[in-house]
Image (cartoon, rainbow, N blue to C red):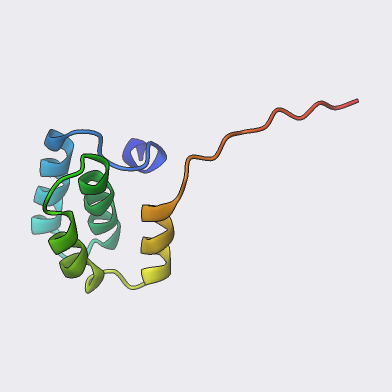
Length: 81
């Protein structure tokens, strides 16, 4: 859950763990999305090839697109009068 809240794996060790999870559960779509986000976050050269492969395993390309392209949302403080 922390990986999703923090927008994906933060280091190569976590990416390896997600890859291992995918090899055990090959139909776990969320793991593919997390793997892609981790590769994107670390500027890994495998990102483009993995994107092509993972896109076939993810049912909603729209979800994939928005998760990869989302910008951090700044929370605005609202003043209640």
